[in-house]
Image (cartoon, rainbow, N blue to C red; front, side, top):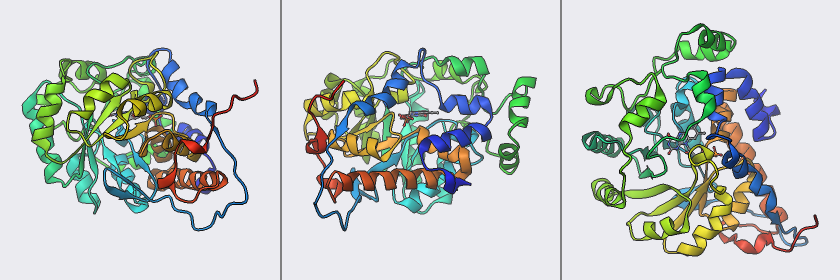
Length: 384
Ligand code: FNR
């Protein structure tokens, strides 16, 4: 029963039981030692909140804005590749859950459902995340498709010029569509609900990429395909080119260093996402929540700052907002919800975060998320 899931960890446990190992591991993995992946989650516990009492806690609101768009809480769904392998038609279900909840959904370039699939199954604009490939004509066509689908923001990912290595994916022989070696057949056969759902859809490979003849290549090995296609020469000049080509709201994703953040200010982007790709790229980099105040200090209010990485509770959301993020994104909490129960599972993940965020904000003595700043944090040294 999804209603018995009280935490994101409960949804994760349920997803582990329902999603074939190779795809569950794809979500629950980081680069190399996974040190940065772990730090993303663990560093939140080092930040303390101030408990306040005897203040009016009625009439609270979590409603806010991200890049000028109204959001029912300052949380967006992060772009994640292969999401339609966590659950059949996963991106459509995620977009529908986000739309009903009143928060942004970001579709990955490497999604299973295509840009057009999402547009056909939702009623409000969604955001599209772009990876820059060597083939610039393909980039132009993707941007054209996002525009035609009515996407209201382009999220340009900067931290994947080359792919960080994740041992679990290599050991599992991860592929999309799934391979049919005995090991993979066994992994799928032990997940009957996943198989039943998957039998009802034809969407099993990268929807934005197949059909684009010159780009199809060999999709069966994700890591070699990425190495072949993604552009290792990506530069600030390209950001400018994409800025002009797209014309709409632009968000730069994957900035961790204050120097890069300062460069982004002059790029014409509307927002940056402080992110280390969920610990999947540079293992050994600092956690996103540790980077956030440094980035915020460097750019001040010159550009809207968002963050992602390690958000697992409403407390985490509030801490990120207090440290200067206008909004945050969730990757794995979304995927765990999806794996645990499709659209209802994603809704459950959002409900959990929203309730925790609301109660935490109230117990900090505050009623309006838009007024939250560093004053809600306890800066005194803690007892060891
Ligand atoms: C990602 N992420 C990602 N980012 C992106 O820009 N394009 C993509 O296709 C993907 N794919 C992807 C797949 C999976 C399985 C994960 C877990 C992550 C990174 C993602 O957008 C986000 O930065 C992190 O997931 C945030 O960290 P948490 O919330 O997962 O801890």
